[in-house]
Amino acid sequence: MTSGLDATDGSLAPADPWLAQAHILVVDDEPGMRNFLVRTLAPRCARVEAVGDVADAGRLLDSNHFDLIILDNILGGRTGLAWLAELRRDGLFTEVILITAFADLETAIEALRAGAADFVLKPFRTKQILNAVARCLDRAALRRENFVLRRQLGTAPRSEAVSRIVGTSPQMARIRELVARAAATPSTVLITGESGTAKEITARALHEQSPFADRPFVPVNCGAIAAEIIESELFGHVKGAFTGAASSREGLFFYAQGGTLFLDEIAELPLALQAKLLRVIEDRKVRPVGSDREIPIDLRLVAATNTDLAEQVAAGRFRADLYYRLDVFRIHLPPLRERVEDIEPLARMFMEQISSQLGLPPLPIRPSVLQRFEAYPWPGNARELRNRIERALILGAFDEPDPGAPAEARTDDLAEVEKRHILRVLAASDGNRAEAARRLGVSRKTLDRKCAEWNA
Image (cartoon, rainbow, N blue to C red; front, top):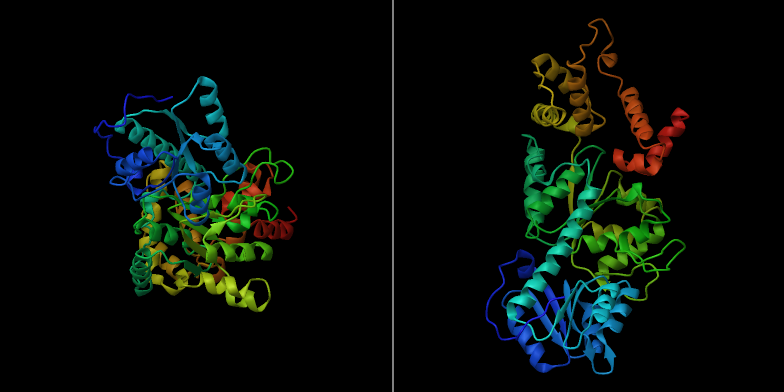
């Protein structure tokens, strides 16, 4: 509990980066308190709105995203706590600071149970409310960042994303130009290309060059999430929405607020969910599963696919209206076989990165190795090249082909290497195919098909 002496102290809280970007809603029926909070917060925040009752507050929340609500507990006819409980039941997870002139320990405990992030006792000093706001925003940002980091375990560190758009070919120079152009706008981007062409890396680079680079980048592999739970994963759900929903939960759209949501393998979305995603893009609102309330969102959407969406539309497997909504700005990543000059810089980058990660000395990439690499079609693209470098580091040498062997046998059997790798990851996941698909970065359907081919 935070308490203070008065509301006129002019001392300032330390500058906070989240405060400067925050959109804050003040709900208090005292005009003097509303004016004080607006004067205090407006010069330090991106936006402040102030209203005197929950009806006006509800209308604002229906059409705008707010990072924080400062809520008075006594609001002429009902309590702020009762309204807060209603918001939480509707699936609105905005941070809330409860303020009141009448408080006891029971009220403070009830506020925390209802979902308030902090509890401030009137009268309070300027610095105290600013510190409470900064703490609340910082905790929310840290929670989102921790969630994103847990999802990103095993992926490229954020600082590597831009440097990994590697290549000296004209095609990659054009890709870097397109990324820079798209990054300057909030427009939806569709990234296309074969598997292994670094679509997620391109999406990360786009995010990092954007004005909201310090906001979350949330990647989602649509093919790795079971169809029966993907709606809840994306939009969240309220308590009791379905069997097993013992509590309310934020969705991935919530965690990406202010940043970028990257929907990889977008073609794997079930048709029913495609319709709901289309509405989200058009209305900029999401409806948690089991809720009657639509919640405004503020983020950039980037989608990716290794399939031809136009063909999927013609076959009735993808909605035409969603396709046109996604295809605002397209970035197509060419396969590695069409840009042979990029093989050497990629190979050398992978050698440096992987040798450092494994704690092994880098291997020299001799001209004979490069010649073989440049003659190979790389059906798995840059991902396959990376795997080849890692395998060579583990073995301590690049495999040398038998000079008398036919040309098609002079390269490792990709299918066998792929099979061993997938089965090894599946075993490490205790046979859980959904988890193995997530670790492999492929859809559950792809993994099921591979296992069926191998009778595994």
